[in-house]
Length: 368
Image 1 (cartoon, rainbow, N blue to C red):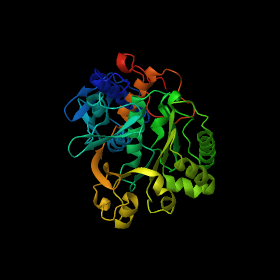
Image 2: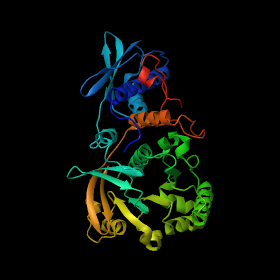
Image 3: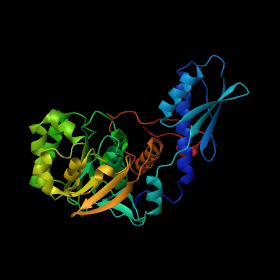
Image 4: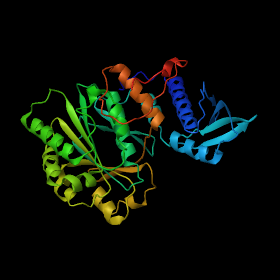
C-alpha cells in the first residue's frame, strides 16, 4: 500500500506541471532577453497553451522553438497571437503511467514492493523485496533500463518507510538517468548518489562488511541500485567487483539491482546463480537475449524498444510494459514524499526542476 495519499492528487499533479512549465518557458525567454511572467496555462486535450505578453518581433522563432523543446523535454511549438508570443506544449502520455498505477493499485502494493508495470492481461507487475534477493535489468541503450530503475525505486519508497527500505544509488554510466533519485528524502538514502568508481567501491565494501556482521538495524533492507554496471566495472575493476560479489552472495537484509547493456559479460557467469529475477528489454542479438534471460529462445532481441520487458523468474517469462513517469511527475512525487519526510535532502544533488508559483497553492514551491 502506498504511504502517499493519492485519492485527490489529479488536479494537484496537473497544477504542478503547469507551474514547472511556466517557469521553464520564462527561463528560455530570458535567454533571449525577454523577461516575462506567465501566470498559468490553458489546458487542451493534446496541448497546453501558455500566453505571454512579449512581442514576437526580433525573436528567432525557429531557434526559440528548438530551445523550448529541449528545455521542456517535450514537443513545443510557437504560435503568434496578435503579435504576441504563445507557446504550445504537447501533452503526451506513456503507454503505462506510473502515477495512474500508484493511484489505481494503491491497496494492492505491499510494503517493500516496487511497481514495474502492467502485464498483457492488465495485471500489476511488481517486485516484492520481502521475497526477492537480487535482480538483473538488461537491455540496449533505448530499452528503458534507467527509467525502469527510477520507476522501481520511486514506487518502492512510496510503499515503504525509511525503517523498512534504504537505497544505495550508484550511477555507473555517464548518463544522469538516476539523478532524480537524489531528490528523495534523505531518510531513504544511505548516502548521496554515487557517480565514481572509487566512491562506489568504498560504499559497497562498507555495506558488505555491515551485512556480513549483521550490524544493520533490524527490519531494514538496503536496496543497491546500479545503473551501467559494465561501465562501473571497467573503471573500478576488482575494487568494485570484490565487494559486489560479496553482496550478491548475501540474501539477508540486502538486495542488489544491476542494470547492464552487456548481459553476456563474464561477470554473470560467476554471479548468475545469485540473480533471482531478470528484467530484460530489447537487446542486440539472440546471443545477448540468451545471456540476459537464461533461456535459449526468449526472443528478447525482437522486443520493441522503450519500455517493453520480459520478467524472467524460474525459467518462466512474463511480458510487461514498464510504467513511466516523466520529469514533471517525478518532481511531483518527490514533493509529496518530502512532505511526508520534511528533513532536508542531501545537498550534493543535481538540478531537477524548480519553480515558484505562489498563486498556485498546491505547487508553490518544491523545497529543493
